[in-house]
Length: 294
Ligand SMILES: Nc1ncnc2c1ncn2[C@@H]1O[C@H](COP(=O)(O)OP(=O)(O)OP(=O)(O)O)[C@@H](O)[C@H]1O
Ligand SMILES: [Mg+2]
Image 1 (cartoon, rainbow, N blue to C red):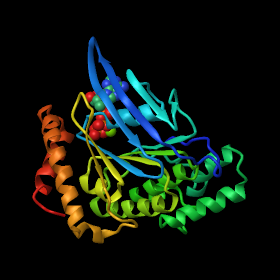
Image 2: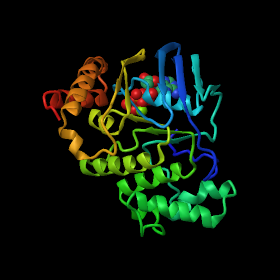
Image 3: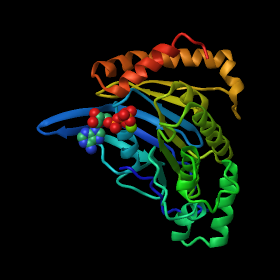
Image 4: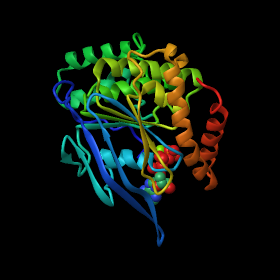
């Protein structure tokens, strides 16, 4: 799956609680004759109106979890529910933003964003107004009639987020949407994203492999272990909102970061031993940031 899914939910009216529960979820893939157990007894909750961040070593199964919640694949064991109803397939109550850009290159930003609502029969004037408002909120006022290839990577990602958000799903799933952006752009993206989350308080599950990104965004961080993957720890992040760069120097931020890094360190080493390049990157990031407080 390498596209941003656009739900068929209307601009107004479909937002809801989005409370999502994974209950002892297991997932086994077959590699030839060899089964690979990726998830084992994986349980956690995404609380309504909260931003939950899922973090774990490369290859541990983060994207697999996103696809299971999205309904693109089914658990081998256990259940996943949204507002108490088992997930049996894709639905308009969930939208996924992946890291790959999936804007329609032949459409302006405005047309990309209003595509979903218009398909649902939302009046064009209403869809356009909301699209323009959201674009302004992410710093893209004046870019409405541009085409995706006229934008920087960061601008494209912001447009992707708006394109998903305008459909007001019950649950937003974002799978490393800012991966690959340079450090400064990524920081700005996080601020824009938080700005919009703090306005909408949409129930969100955000996947990352960066501890700083997790702490900056999250109400709660779910730390995954290495395969077969289950939840290693859950860290609540009681840093006040709205957040900005000043929190980076607070004692609480430093303590939470130290705790998250310690928990991840052991798992990253396990991933590292499997020899994947991305795991090496994470182990390197952790070992270089472990000593710094903020
Ligand atoms: N459709 C599939 N068929 C077989 N194996 C799969 C399939 N999808 C994922 N896997 C395996 O499941 C494991 C977890 O993959 P997944 O992409 O969920 O990890 P991830 O945590 O998202 O990794 P990354 O940090 O690189 O994004 C990997 O070993 C992968 O090879
Ligand atoms: Mg992934």
